[in-house]
Length: 134
Image 1 (cartoon, rainbow, N blue to C red):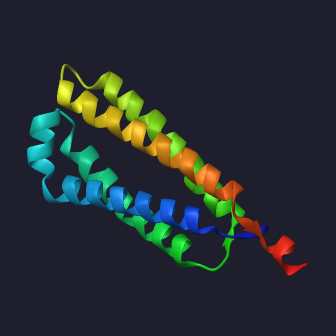
Image 2: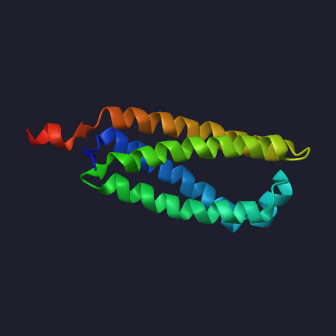
């Protein structure tokens, strides 16, 4: 597998993604019922995605702290963020008459798309292990 030496930019973006994702996870898990009532989103969806985000945050922090990472892991994060954005747009389109639910999901889509772009840029400015060894 190809690995890279992550740039400081990529590390900062991964940690920023972890911080935002962690805050969302905390909100969804600590205030599930209130958030469900405000947004019209199902409590089960909020809990399930909140739990997923806890694992995602862990992955991002581990990747950001490593001296080298597999390129495929960064691509997994990028593609995962884009998939999350699509899923959030689907949720936004299917929340029945709940403007706050639509907005909550749309903000998710915008944020994770921005992180995917920044992580892609960070991947581009990171050095390859092969290039640095020569």
